[in-house]
Length: 134
Image 1 (cartoon, rainbow, N blue to C red):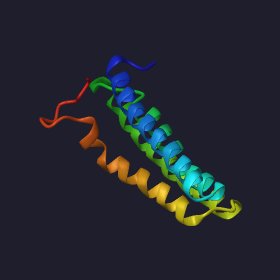
Image 2 (cartoon, one colour; image 1 turned 60 degrees about the vertical axis):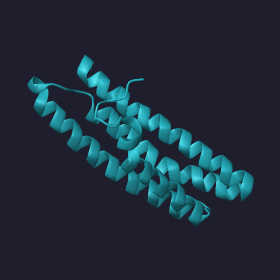
Image 3 (tube, helix red, strand yellow; image 1 turned 135 degrees about the vertical axis):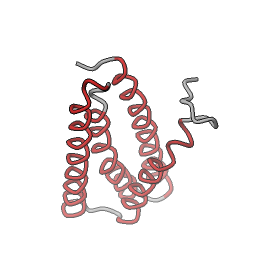
């Protein structure tokens, strides 16, 4: 069962994942329109390679919260990160080995999502460090 504090964390994480999904879809659309269908689905696959494991991490890492559940919180973060790394490698191998991809579009999409993850605090928090709920 997810308590209120954990639910807040999940909602914040899912907002980030939703933003990244919009970014992936935008990149795929731009790649398709300005380059080719192959570049479009390559961008989509590059984004999915980052987005799907990140979604699973958010779901697992914020399943529990609070001092009484510290072991569950820690276990969720470790398990979430392990699954995220494994699934990222698996998706990279599958898409790169079996897909006829435009590698530049694939890697650019993947890289932009990694950068969006790093820059998330600048977009989801205001200047005084408090969460921006508005």
